[in-house]
Length: 270
Image (cartoon, rainbow, N blue to C red; front, top):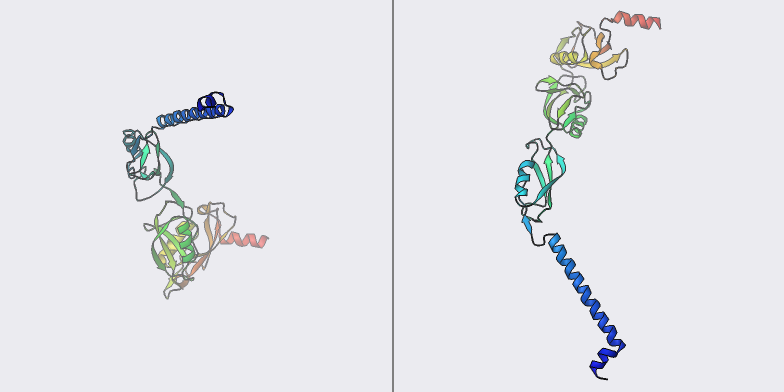
């Protein structure tokens, strides 16, 4: 049997023919698929990614559109020293190549500055206060030393010379001043009359003359409204002389007319 007859009549030849036909069909399918993918994905049509950092999203949109690209915001951060709303980071990096229609992923600087709550660092050591301020994203501008019974404790927190209440909202990275105790001084100071004054005014008044607030006793436990309470008794009493840096204990009530006598009457009653 010659090759021509074998090719026409042999079962083996039939199998080979079917195999070759299947291979040809598979090749055509793969070729068409790859060609379609090239057309769909714009194979070979890539654009150089511009540097968007430092630009606003409106500028980036115009620049990218001219190259057939888009952008997508994936995150935001807050950098105090940079303009609000600008692009701070991008992916892919500038100079990379990206196919038309694909997005550049960007991170922008927030348009609203972040706020931090001033933590309660009064009567804490300087080291504790420093750690708490760092967690709250606040900075220390300068240390002011004042006479105090307890050395290295925080007596007051100030910004531009003004005392700050605990819980005050401040922009992140604000630099504040800390008033720190340096120990008992040699100077003798007359104790002022503090009755019918609130705690904020008292702190400022005492710090100005070299004294500090000691124990605070409330007739009713406050609920975040400490500044609505007024002193009705103090120890030491007004007019006594004490060393600079000494503490003055306070008894406070919302009743501005309450006196030490009324406190004594309550104690006698019970």
